[in-house]
Image (cartoon, rainbow, N blue to C red; front, side, top):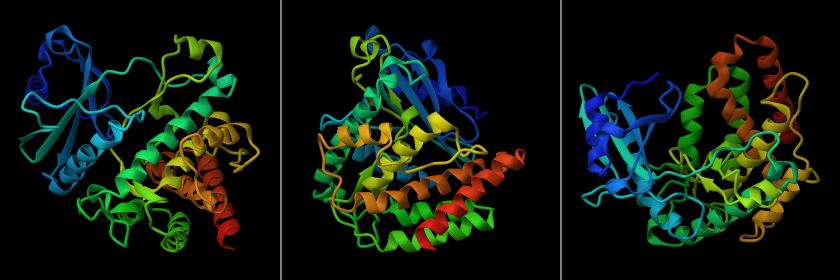
Length: 348
């Protein structure tokens, strides 16, 4: 587990008006997680706040600047009525605070505590399918706001897909380079490079490409299971959290992350004997697109391209789990077989 120095944590909390003595650990902190999260009552006994602290070894200023850029771009999206939580400014008006100790640098930001939890088996809104429709609607609303942002100076991108304003946000190519350097399995590396070639042929334009959450899976959406809508099986109000890998990418990458998570929920993550059909007729996928279209048309090429992004998601997720799968050869073989089959289906 990562350990945030007590003096760093308490100092950051006080800069957001939070009572450091009342802080409680809330989540994260694992070696693979992107931050450590604490919760405490808000200033003056107001609504609870969440403090998230990210650490950057070796004083990595590039990673620090990338996080700062994400927080600045979140403002217009959260103000648009999307389900993103808006960061709460520090007492001095800044969106984030910084601190350093030894060879590490830390960035902290706060946001309102969102009551609720992630989906669980047996939830009425899951059994009815309403949750899938609600998730699609919220993602469609978010992408509609991102499309507006993409046409503003802050949302401009270069021909390569990198931000024209925030060079730290290198877009899809930066993400592909990062995972390519992480990948230790030649078969996945080959599939990844074929995906790179395929994505390079897609258009980068405001109606298809912009600033996205980039990890919009089921378990990053919170809802109140005690709300009348959730208990009746109707569409619950959702809140999208954990935007620490947000970047410029195709909107379909977000959609694929959501759809892929539906299959993980139903079938497990590439477990032996299980497969990932794209299934446009599949119930959760159909309901997702019904909700999405309330706020945004996915465009004429979505059916042709969503398979590419589902394969992208499958390959991308292999990298964080590649060491764990070595302890489960059957799981590893199943996942690699699925990647090879998907690669062959898409590219021959």
